[in-house]
Length: 310
Length: 185
Ligand code: SF4
Ligand code: SF4
Image (cartoon, rainbow over all chains, first blue to last red; front, top):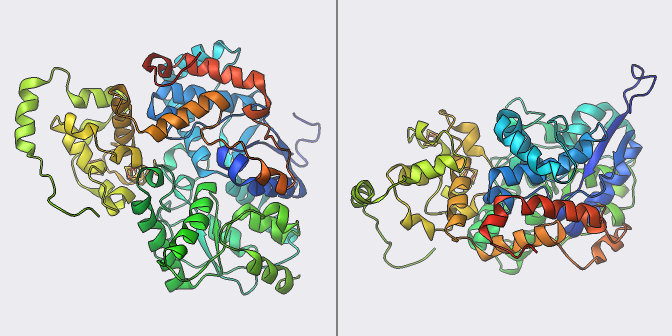
């Protein structure tokens, strides 16, 4: 892992933690990451054998040690190679880091987890953690490098950012933290680096209503997504919604179409994960890096490719 | 929202009954299931002010659930879906001035409900899928992956039988096995 020229340039390498939704629902997000990171000098390891993080409705709802044990097996896959994980799914980011935080804080949990892991010949030391791809881009790759890497810019395009809950809270458990988690800046700056305007809007940090809320009560979930979309339309009339979470992506894209069909909203705003937007700006094939959606994206992609040549 | 008469629960009566009837207090169970700082709550309501569940009208959102637990309610809570709607966003944990971590209370309540088999079918499906495939969300159709030029199988337990068996071994050694919620041969 350590080369002779460590001092010269530290080679960035992460285990790509996919999670369920990106693997099966939105593999264009996976493809986007597989394109952008090597091009930005970040090496990707596949973490062969990774599983569900585990997501909130599974082991976290049953038992803390069981939750941590499943998370620890995933973290071990990185730890064994001396690398951290990185993910584009806020739920995975949340579940893995909450679990790690519990294990580090409570030696009893850690030792029970390792008793279980011993049965499959593994041990978790607490070293490997899970980074968020947006933070890797912001801190490790850096805004300057991102600016240099793009072929198309977003000049004249206004985006509404949606960082998503687990990008922000509880800040205590995460490896990277916003200066003010209730006034997040990172995603706005990442979008501005592509040339876009990314203004504040009142419901910027509001929940999209995905996940447990949506599976428990779709009607109540749609209240949240509708309020959010209307706020985006009214206050900043965004051309595009950009998120760092695969769950927010699915909800804002998918529920928007449902609201239109029910006659509850009469506008359409395309939604992209930030890694997809970056991949498009870097010149990768939109069919591969952003080919799956319910709310149409063709127009905005065309506008980016035609209007923003640098 | 539903129409008709809302059901009013007399908290004073419940509190009285709790004193008389219960052995182990609900609050003790909730603490045992992970909400270590439950008793620090001073009912300031900060957590409710940021909770998406409170905003869209779920009955037993964080602050109110904590109050109910502290006065010893249990049966009345078991049929309520609110804890299962919690998005684990942790806005409440971030803002609580007493480090109660209301999210932990919500999830401890889920764990208590699981013991009483008050668990939504969808959650059981997710757990079954986790055991069978290593993914809580799993799809057999692979058109999406093919369409974007990726191999049909992701490099997960989906394409690694040994890893899937390892995961199952782990799950068989957790509380999930004791509960018998899903078949685990
Ligand atoms: S914010 Fe904390 S102290 Fe205040 S009501 Fe909620 S849990 Fe209790
Ligand atoms: S974690 Fe749950 S209880 Fe806390 S604010 Fe979010 S939805 Fe509400």
